[in-house]
Length: 319
Image (cartoon, rainbow, N blue to C red; front, top):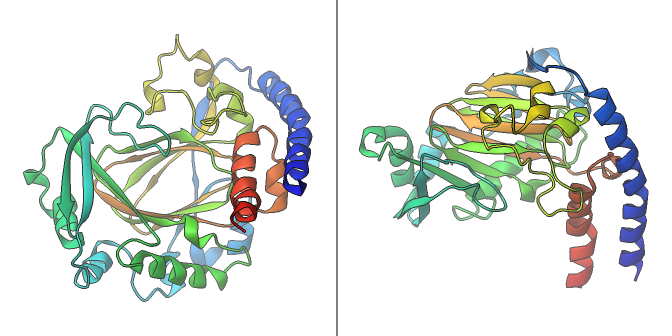
């Protein structure tokens, strides 16, 4: 009963905020043409991480990984070391390159090409050493959660959380992080999240395209009550969007950046972002817990509800 009342109150609070924000944003972003600016870069030793993580604009941080004092740096060399202790095989899916897109809900048109069972050592060979032996018409992507690889992934995330706790007072969401390994051309389509995040680029490079919350009317999101609301309906590579079909996207003011090995991208809550692998790569998306104020961010009923449900409704139902 209390859960239903709280949820009703949350929706009642956010609906008028969303409506007013949408009207204001649509009037504000009616410009003839948008632009792209470079994401700001800073050195880890020159900034206060609390100020960065509590900020409201993206930043690429250089030199942060050594500051964490990790027992195993989860780059290619570190995962090779980990592979010496791993003998169990897992499933690896490869998709046709015409639509090499990753999405939490649906597949964005990606067509499965083959499935293989590999050990971690075999998978790393397949991804980084045996590039000529792989079918050039396919791409491969694998997300390892904290319970994978005999929970070794969780140990890595815990050590990262411990290192970050010395630099910031924000609470990590350890269960929501993991290790991403993908081949050239894999794309995470344009979407936004309700949480503060750090994207650690450990091996290889990626291109990042980001937009502030005020640009949401130009990014073709759906109703805030839809299950896929935090995913744009633009093509997975948004730069491929037809100007006649998506005219508002041409007005969007965005930020672009390149993440190379050792870079860390700060992603503020509700900033829309699209990521494309420029070469085989390893990265870790690290999340911090959502603060109460984040639930009131205008225009984002669905992600606010998702976090509310995961933190309060689901645990209550399991008791």
